[in-house]
Length: 343
Image (cartoon, rainbow, N blue to C red):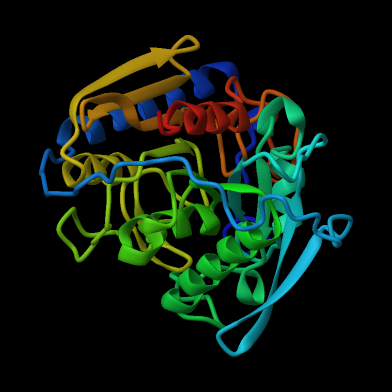
């Protein structure tokens, strides 16, 4: 599912509010977002961006015999772990494809993220190979509730998954992306901060991320080996992974606007711009990093709870419960990845 277990949590029910109460609450939420934005720090630290050159993987030209098996198994460390893979309908073993690694939320599996986000649909993923690893015990390392693996073991597992995919399928090794939801979105932040984790990816996307491992400022030991383009989407009405920070199920959470500005500081980004969209329902922030616009982006959806942003109904919206949102995260994330492809 999402953050640990929704049983007993207080759902976000727009239908229970009167029209006036809803308008007042949304106005207060917007003021809180504005206050956090004004208060957020503009600190800086140095991160060097590596030059990116497209490169075919060893799996190119190989007619892998197990293409019909969506679940793959591999040994990593002393454990046997698995991932789910989805190939483009017109997969050609002689053509190098981008890869997107998807990280599910806690008490879940990779397939749930695939179905909830609809990322396997060609209208979103296009010609990308989609890969969904399964977290040990149904979650990813970082929060206090996780058992079964350390942060380093999970990062090593991700590296092993990427290596396995590159050896079996035709992959452009310089176009490897990561996306995660909730606990998986927090793990995106963990990967971005880690020297090895950050080296594995060309771009990263977090949705409703629970950033337990990065909650106390820009200079907290976060040590990426390069600047990785990053985007985050969050609901301001999220009651499970609060947009405004505080105590979460797995530890202390940062306020998301602060967290975004920490990355702006780490990557020496400038020219932060904020635009309100959809009748002030969505705020979109962008930064210029390494001389390129939009390498750091953030969307906050005022009335959205803890669910995948989708203009059509999906599973996670039903558990909040709430209806569709005005933005489509899968489209935004895939377009972001396309925009940061090496030239």
